[in-house]
Image (cartoon, rainbow, N blue to C red; front, side, top):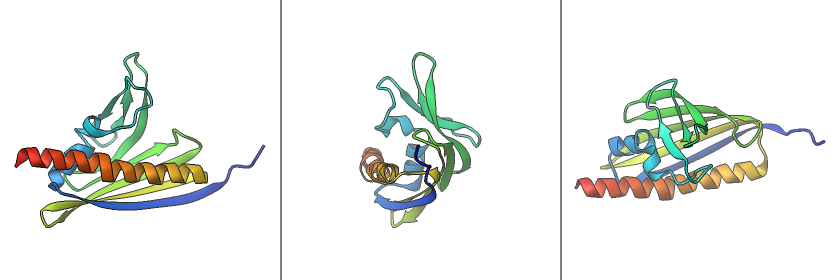
Length: 150
């Protein structure tokens, strides 16, 4: 049996979203289920409890589900920090999302830290998945909402 490879991985990404900070903040909190494309089950409902100590995750009709993370820091229109114990393996993760004004738009920064048995395949999955979530799903949703508000 192979020894687990214990290590620390840091994934830092950012994208510009043509929407206000409050629109982006609502999207990553109260409206998470409206744009989040990934589900462990096709009948899963993605949720965000909107309070420190609450969770974000997926609820299933049969009463089951999965907690993606626990909300550790929640600062209105500015910052969210979540932590989790590995759903995909033996690791601990902290995800920090920061929103910064940028000439009528918002810079969305994501800093994902993973500690533990983190394979290269997992790093690729998290890096590519995070980039897809930010640059396609979140950005498209927020910009559509912003356009509807104009």
